[in-house]
Length: 241
Image (cartoon, rainbow, N blue to C red; front, side, top):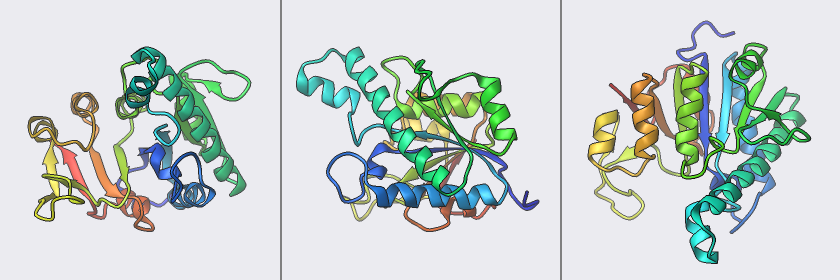
């Protein structure tokens, strides 16, 4: 392990949309391999890495359930299954790079993944395996942001990394539509909540605050970004007390 690492155990949150690439739907090989390679680079430095991947590239519970007339709970369960599909795709990419990886799900599906057990997950990390947490919290009405904060807290992660596509941190407004949006280099948990910033769910932010898990929001498209974060380089936005 690199003795200069600031964070030796992290949880990485990746949106499902990041797996689409230039496609309008589903999973594209190029971004999946890019994400896997970025994770591998950080893993090679000796960091223990857990990952939560969203499912919005396949099915977004709140949005899609309303469109097709499903009740919210049913839509959220479908969204959880979408995260499992993405987790398997990312696991396959990592295994093709000879990185030992385990998928653990909050909903039992023993033929394709391990059930989530906290101490087993920590043991996998200690053995140098990447652990991908799928199916959210296993409960409807909770997003994968909240699942990420929960798992980060449970595994005693030293930081939660929020990977964004083309946005290099937390802004006062959407920088893609407002050129005058201000970027924050550092911001408190409370300010994220009070200002109503849409970088993550308020429940996720509050959970990280309660368990003193700092959040780093960064642009995943910048090569080597995970490595920079775990080495302590100041990129993106640091969210903490």
